[in-house]
Length: 278
Image (cartoon, rainbow, N blue to C red):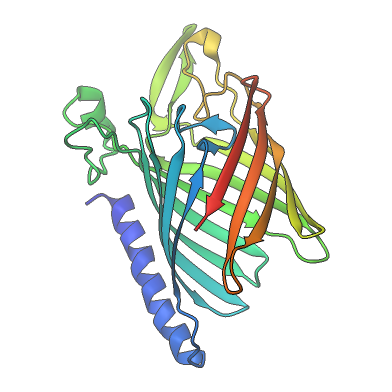
């Protein structure tokens, strides 16, 4: 197991230990620390990028959360699976997060994109040994680990800010110019993304406005590949807004629905998405 994989395992163990401490401090309640659910969306659009092709997507999640109003932790898994179409690449992520006073969050996410047509997706390949990668002895890991720091806003300040950066794994390789030629280095780009958000409620309808930008500027003309988000230049890739509400089905059950209008100015794309949460 690589050093990074061991570090992730250590964080997971620490979180479980911390959960035990909080469980001793907090009185027993009827609310379970476990949660499970899924979204059904007409398209899977992530940060202004179409990851689901032309197919609707089912997006399940599992989470264990613990803590109190001052300090809380969450450990979970999230996935995205296309219902039909030619899209074969799916997604299976795990994450761990810490939230301070409901205002600030630090989240580590391990992204992985299995291919349904592949018999072996090498999920347990954590190789980042550049000598083995360069020689072709062993493929680079397919995992991407991201660290994200966010301000979640408050009742008085309905603004949110999130900064995310890939810190390990299958990000694009970093290039340097040598004699007018772009040469791949034994490093990753550590792609960066920032997003601003504003939330409000209008007559029972939640309104969320967002603006996200990729901060890396690949030098396409010199042979460097496009950025992690498919961008050919740094700029806004995720502008739009979402509306959500709950439709009362029975006295004890309501169905959350949401819709989003999303544009990607850098890629000159536009998307409309409808979803239902279960």
